[in-house]
Image 1 (cartoon, rainbow, N blue to C red):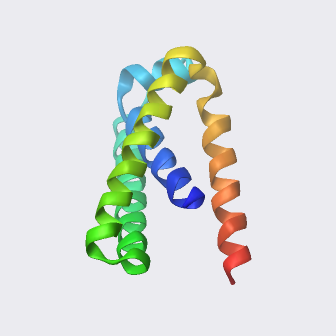
Image 2: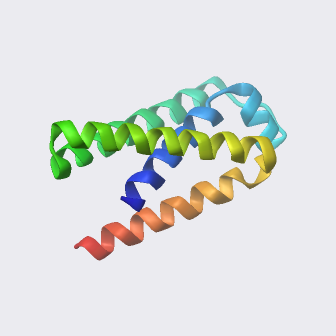
Length: 108
């Protein structure tokens, strides 16, 4: 569950960084249009893979409900991250990616 929450968090972080205003606030420089498309691609891919994994493990009914709850919590965490410590967002994204990778390695 924690890895799914972190995958949702990573997805919504990518969605927020795909917006020019949030990117400028976090990195203090403008973003290129190709960067925005890349962030959106990563975000949608992560969301779809997480949803597929949740449906595969929990079934369609419970998996959908659990995943929507995780997405809601992750979106709330991204909102708090952007409002209070926007410069910390890339570090939190990297940390969530490390935890997701460790959890995937542990599952093998």
